[in-house]
Length: 466
Image 1 (tube, helix red, strand yellow):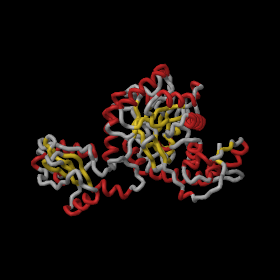
Image 2 (image 1 turned 180 degrees about the horizontal axis):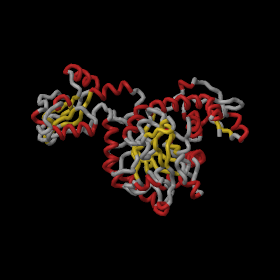
Image 3 (image 1 turned 135 degrees about the horizontal axis):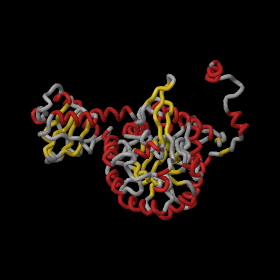
Image 4 (image 1 turned 180 degrees about the vertical axis):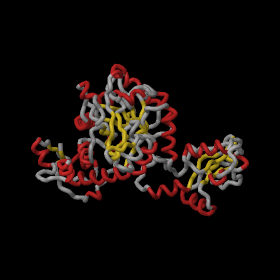
């Protein structure tokens, strides 16, 4: 499948690729990383949000671990940090240092109950006796600001007093938040970053439809909850999802769906759905279709779900999930009706992905595994993504993908390729791509013609010389 060239009215560099990922959340780049334990933890979610995309935190961990990942994303940068890490005056220096190390921060407000009584910085505890109490080393005379402080005034105070942290307190000196020099400087470094109303990075997390308790706990810390089940079109899944939809405030994206009927039922039988995750069995590490002869390839699924949403007048975004190998695949998925594209393989290659690195033949690779693979299923903390009857049968594989460096580099390549593809199609933005895109099927002979041919490539010559 290819996109046919159309009349271009805009240069690729000016193509707008902003798009909705859920009913209330807009991305600056339509890229979403998959909720897999070798793809998306807090580091990847932070990196993608800073580039304008979205990371969906995996759930192959305890609730507490997933909550901590979400909190790290929200603490990474903000106008005002609301979930402030603090220390009590009676705690030891050793405990304070452990908190600083765990949360990768250089200072802690000191609170007695809710009241701010001091601040402890890295300089205060450097070379200090670890058994000393925090109150003996903390700075008691703290520069603070009220809850009505604005961004520019905060910058002035930080500069005037040569401090890096500005606690926000109410009239009773109860700690309400924290502004840091680091967060202010990061806002200028990442102009494309996508943030919530509080100025914190956008964050999403995966949940099982049957794990209402986890969904409610995450709801306080994330903007989007992604129902993470291999086959969403299931009576029990629908019943469980209704409870989540009515019990949380975050946008809820449901999936995975693969047919017109699945989308039709979701639209007509579920209230409050904020988006759809679409595609069944087409991921590079998924063997569901091969093993069970059941699936819905991503392009087919996107087209069918888009038709259903159009027929029912449901203005909701579609996330195309699976089978994406390059920017051209992303453009095709968007042209078929998707608003964003989810990938595991592309982002598993990045430095920020939690998979381990291995050197093979002078090249570096990163671990990548499907959540239905044997090793991932062994480490199964939360309710399973795969149905109970299938738990005895692996639905994914595990292996290695080429290491590509930082996520920002991968994103820049994908952005350039996507804009070029959309430019060829004659689209200024994703909405125009939906209207103007025209597809063509390519025969085997045509596919051969579109690849480099009648030339000896360096890689081929090296192989022949061996």
